[in-house]
Length: 198
Image (spheres, rainbow, N blue to C red):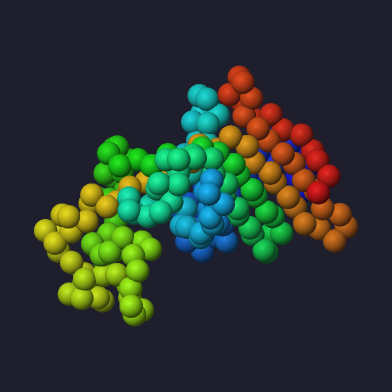
């Protein structure tokens, strides 16, 4: 049973670390909201925590041609919503988004992906209009894994969305009464929390 603010902070960090590594985690596919108030479900690929500064970062894969890339460039404010129905825990995070195109983390993410997964970056950009239902993939790659050579042009379309978390809101739903805690990163770069009514 969580009873202290520090236990809440540790619980959130553990849940984020699991969500990034375990595809069966209920928090693996949160809702990500950009500053233009558009929302989409994305796969959480990594949760990075800096032990020296208490900084937390969420990482997602994205296509450089996706509309959210321009939205983040215009307004980097972002929100991410996680929910675990079984645990009855909702976590809302706010932060600042950044698109990474050329970075060791981007190269590592690209190199760790399978060719079948990376083929998504070969096709038309997200949101491209079509007269019929389409995956956007070139016909020769529908259901087929491309070779490394065939993927060379796809790399330019791949990037990471990194969100630096600046605040989070933890809500535990219980029939006896909900509990809620809110945290912000203070000027000293540590997490400052307080209890709040749900």
